[in-house]
Length: 400
Image (cartoon, rainbow, N blue to C red; front, side, top):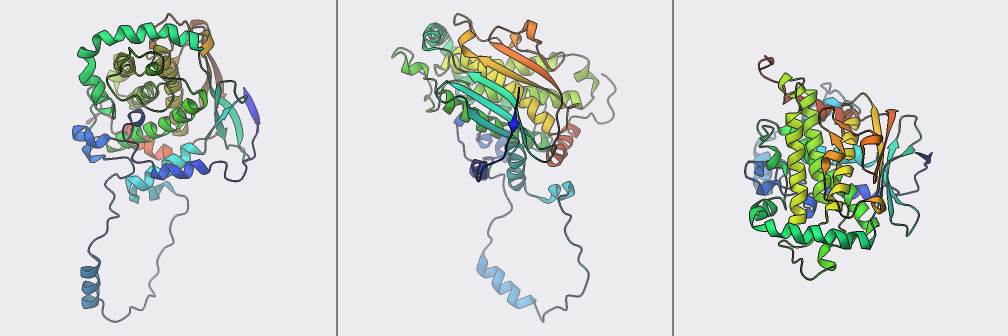
């Protein structure tokens, strides 16, 4: 579905200005707390990557200057002007400065609407700038199930409570960033894969931004609001239940990491889908654990996984990492089988890094495949290429 050409009203994307200050999401949607995850401590909160823009003692600097500056210099030597709009500048920026740039690049390429007002439908639009004047095209449309469906889903929430003792440690650790769980599959470390971690932090922040808008529009009540017997083992977040933020972010990360592995051209990744399957299983377990904890219904994870898989593809496209073909999709909550549990296998095939074709999708999911997207981001392409290079084997892959 293609939207009309869109003329931005004054301040239409003003909310994106707040991205620069969102480095302390804390536990919101598994974002912002890399600092509490062992080796990931070097990341800190996303908005404070260990910036070098700290203030040394002003008085010692003043007295030092007075002692050494001498007579004024005759500034006649040639100084080259800066390189305008050039990705060569990116390597000299601190990571927190680049973070604001990445979010601007992604944020200005999407928009969210509730259509029509009061209908319980959220529409995420991709904004293409390829022809000068921005055009809107549907990316993900989502509607919520009925309250009757959620009441039936409560049987799953109650049933999953039985395995809380087995999952409690995972659940508590996954309140913050899920990245350490993926690092057990793909070898990630701040010293080894700094650009990969930077890309994943960008993906988490962007996914959080999108999901929070959808949650606000759909306004789905949490399980604890339906029954006093659920008694979640973690604090229930104040934002809406559907889509699940953890599922959205977990599947965004899983697919994005899988795309990086495939893009590296290393044979052991390309010749089998085991790596992709393990990443998806990790994402699914993270999502499922939120139902075990008592804060989500299975349908929340189904919606979040679908949204996250699409967000990962969108980010990769903006990084210039695909041939340009893209998909749009629709999650119709009213068609969801309320008796069903969450199952990611019905949505996606790691073997082809591909959302299922329409005939193989469940009744509540629709997917349309489109031609080449109109534009990508040169700065994001720079980050992507840096991240991909971290997965290339040294020396050249022998195929072992």
